[in-house]
Image (cartoon, rainbow, N blue to C red; front, side, top):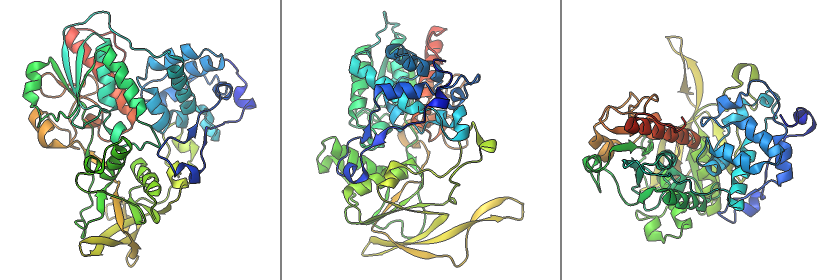
Length: 483
């Protein structure tokens, strides 16, 4: 490594943010880029640890010690080439990935992991600024046409890899813009959407064709695509949200989180209110907002609600509050369960743990409050522990707007999945092994959340890349694309 003693001499340093009171005034990203000299110093902290456990933590198999060393030696362009050899979209993961690589870093044993996510983001951002990132066109075509259904990170990664292998992929997207969850699920203050537009423009030059407002199974049938294309790739994501079937669910003011987030992203994109919210606007302005669910989507709802000007935002999590610090001997180098505070939490939010919602109450068809109860672990007759409501612990919480952010149960089956005639796994996802990503239907492959269930953007990119390699090998007998 470039500086074997770097981790002893240099403290871990993160990027800085605008102050909460300032960033709440805008929908723009609020992270300050780190000066290049500081990035090089942080990269020098990557120790010669023998076994780079960060490789285990990174789903796309980034060669993290290698690009850290290159940045330390001021070889930024070579570092970019290395990074892009494993990750099609580092500017996405450099902003929204929870960085499991840092959890696996050897220095995380003492809570000072290398700032891998920062370094990755600065490498690719500089690549765009310097004009180093250019379309990678195939020298010749294969004549094979592939339909990729879904333009989220899995579909985009798959299509880009296939185009670079010489095939002719067409991406079908049911929405009016390309990007899937990246476009409409992630708020602009976490990732501005010009980043997606820039990659789409690159991919178009590489030969990828995009078709928006095409809902496969509705606008066009699956059979028509199979007639016109050699292979169909199902990359539609896990879009079926987990609901809360309790009394009062029908009251106005109780919404799925993604409906709320999508509306705001469309407004930020310049859509008028009729296009952004054809079913009626969901606003948090001046309201007591309760977010049910403690994950990233819940955090995005908090940040969006605060920018609307909510009176109070409360986040409920059914699981008990995790420890502030994990037991390293039990968890490292795996992803730890510990208390995490996001930038949205810092902007203003009350958090409550081990809480279940029993019913919603309201008047004139509108939600006004919710009845909750405390949860505790109990041991059943079979010796297994489970969470159960504490008798007599019910309490009432004022709520003008309730956002359900409890995750997704899998892909929507009506239309596309049903027409495809593919088998499903026990969880309702499209059944396709990671060995070849082939479904049980002829000439149909699947990748991303539609295959694996709800997951991270970085996992979707990995699956899209691996699926492209499998499709290439299926069509050509062999493939030079990396897995």
